[in-house]
Amino acid sequence: MTTPQLNIAVIGAGGKMGMRVSNNIATSRHDGYYSEVSPAGQDRVREAGRTITDASDAVAEADVVVLAVPDLALQAVSAELVPQAKPGAVILTLDPAAAYAGLLATRDDVVFAVAHPCHPSIFLERHTPEEYADTFGGIAAPQDVVAAIESEDAEKKAIAEEAVRVIYAPVIDVHWVTVKQLAQLEPTLVETIACMIGGLLKESLHEAVHTMGVPEPAARAILLGHTQVALANSLNGDNPFSDACLIAMDYGRESIIKDDWKKVFRDDELDTVLARMLRLDAVAR
Image (cartoon, rainbow, N blue to C red; front, side, top):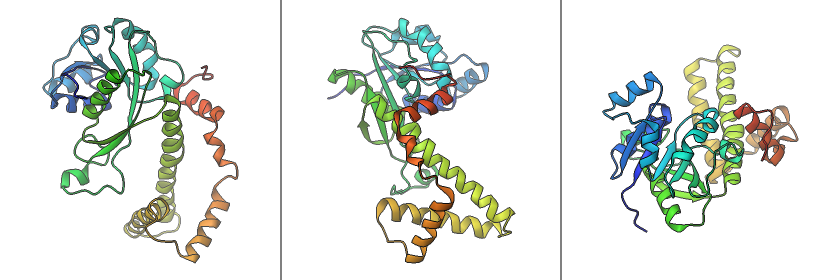
């Protein structure tokens, strides 16, 4: 389905994600409206050669409204702007936490969607210096996106997917899931677990250098290489681990990982972490 040219409003256009998605909209076939309230953010928007549009005016014209604001601001921002959206508009957030927690203002005649970038895979085949440099995605390195939409309307889903492919370009695939499933992936799978392990690796590198006294270039080189091998062997099945490595892995699991660690995949644990992230007493759905 070919989508028409869209008016896409970015609320929070001068923030980190706001600038990223605005950069891609500005080079697309669609028309962008860029709203930002902070003086520093407005300066960034203008320095990029874009015009600041008042949020009310931007939303009134938009086929798609991208709420590129922090999770903690989404409740207030949506309460202000969702009532001003034109009927049939798609309201797109970039993170599932507020949507899953029921914090977004709603309207029966607008469509709500969430889309989160997967970021370029560690196994991505890269060809250019720009692709190698783009570890986050949205500039040169292709990435997938996981998205959810609260509508069965195929036309609205196509419009949402077009907007998603624009703001996170270049995009390989858009994987459609439920809002709950997206929340289970982000934060549980990728922040609670994967990003935590990344932080643990950084702490481990510090210990190897500053406690064990290993020269940092040597420790960093062996850690980065073995991290890729560990992921390739575990997730891609590239090569089997050696018997000695499997013994060391078992020791690591016994020494570091709690026996009940898989509880983080329970619904009540998801509610707990989202409440912390959104600074709520509890998630009420």
